[in-house]
Image 1 (tube, helix red, strand yellow):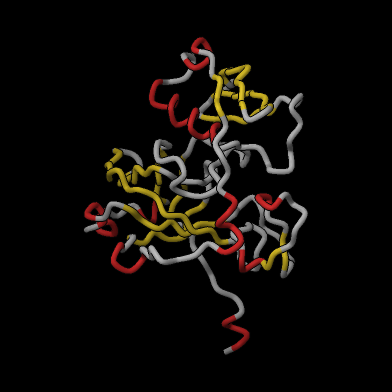
Image 2: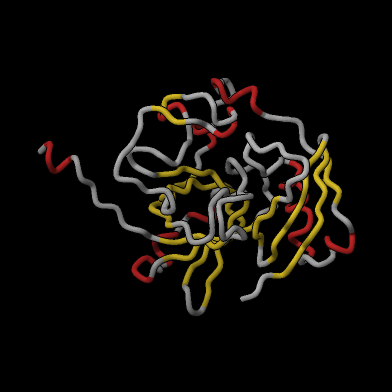
Length: 234
């Protein structure tokens, strides 16, 4: 029994399609930017509308997913959370680090609607996700506000880490290059400072891909300045 329990088979039921083809720039937690819209596309085996019967009655859902880009054969009991500057170790089970015995993530997102695609079957349109494009989804569960919400909860060492937002200078001629529905979500995302907390070089030009564009910016004295928006080649 112990040998069988040590190995559990999991199946990918869907993938998420988001504006983030790389890890840089992704919100640090789900729900931080509700304006970000993503699509959950099911694998062929699970494109049965009956599996989603009743789901549209819930405003939010839990996504259980796989850190597919950070899988390792070994694990460490402690990790260095980036929000602590990468210099302080915490127990892996006290963090949301991707480097865990089982590289599984958990995100609460808003379910905007359920659509039916003629080729893909039922597709979930969600907002507020913190997942990279193509991330495998292992399961979906409804969020139950009468049990899942805990107003009295405390946040441990992560509680004081919410930092003051940056001022964002986004020239109109650059902002106008983006589709209208992506402009304000990106501006709010930049205000949260997407840089790793240990990178503070005011001369450095940072960049990340977002929704088919490359966004480049600098940060100095609490102000983020966008210096380039370039459409990516397909």
